[in-house]
Length: 295
Length: 310
Image 1 (tube, rainbow over the protein chains, first blue to last red):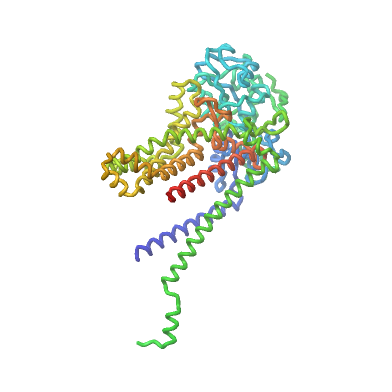
Image 2: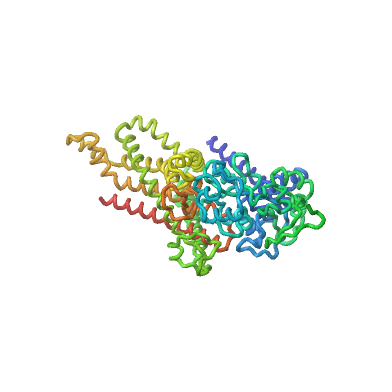
């Protein structure tokens, strides 16, 4: 009997402790000291790292960062369920999203490059060849100047921002042939690295010595070439808000766009800063040079 | 101390402590039941409403959905209809399920026979804990092993990328093996002892007894075990997704990338927007998955009923 009493007491204490904890967190979120950012997994590391730094500098605030994918981010922000939606795409490009009412904050630029297995014997291709490879017109690497190896296509999942960018700017708007699909860039690199004949595409930050990045039309996939738009396959990373941001959301986005973060975190994590760019690109792919910074 | 009749009557009419406890117990267990039923109904209702939206709001033809071979929800075909043909995934799911069950069944029944008939002592000491351990390994671990061991192996033997139904079968077979084994063992254990005694008394050897008596008598139970394993294989997502390659194509060979209902669901759901056709189409896949597991359950019940009648 005493043992049972003791157990009941313990249970009660745990309940009370949980109640207090819940009450505390409720206070924090009610005070407007907490916001949630949901969406793109490609952008997640940056928002997470920036959020940690921000909360360390501003006690009492909390930036809750979740993945889930670009589609999730945009649909959640459209419904107003979260404060920030992370996206690899312009909201207007995503099907099922009414871009009106969503405000775009560009926080980074990411370059995307085709990568191939080192055994393929390919280091350069033309856009035409790349398109032929990804649409299935060419099925062996020797047809485009490589070794006698069958081509193994690896796509990112349908609706992935990286895939959308690659299809739009890498293979001239064609739809890649249905083939293997993987839902993360790390996995894609791993497969390309180990599979002879494999080709896929990843963000610059995922390129390592173990895979071969491919030059396109004589242009190497480097940051300098992205900045001048000589390398065409790149996209903005967006933070979307519903209407103009206010309060903590506004402060946090300003913080991510501030020179301190743009010069440190953004660069460290393998993105480019939009302020480095010599051009801007709109939702239709229209490129305009930024005045005064010709190169 | 004597009690007045009124006092006595009151005391007798009052509910005893035990009776109160009983009512309390009934309330608790009944509300638990209600909660579970409500959750199940809510899940089925939600998946059905989302999954049927493809056909009601997006006006996709049910037959096109079930028999179409092109899965590209964001594109439209020549007739302006969205390409939401799920056949390749349905085929992929069934193929991988049936194959892994075919591979797993002999191993499972063999293990169960060893544990129950041939060497009950050693079986209970070694095999039982080992199979239980296999059940406890998370599916992501199976997937990871599949990715780093099975896929390179099939690649080096059969060429290609190594991703495909064959790799998926290898992983799934190990995953469902413990389930099928322990259920088969239960089925063998349920065979009455006097069956064996009678057989042995007639001069049958142990092998003859196992083959002609025990396994025959346990057939419904063994079939239930296999179907249960198949149900598990059908619904497994993560491990399969890591090794099958996720290409929504009709499988032409066992070593080409293919896709299952679950693998397409897990890769796609984060990249679509709630309420859009792309999202609804994925929910339709989930609905197919749910209906199939209901079918598996029905089969298990049918087998069970048939077994009892015999």
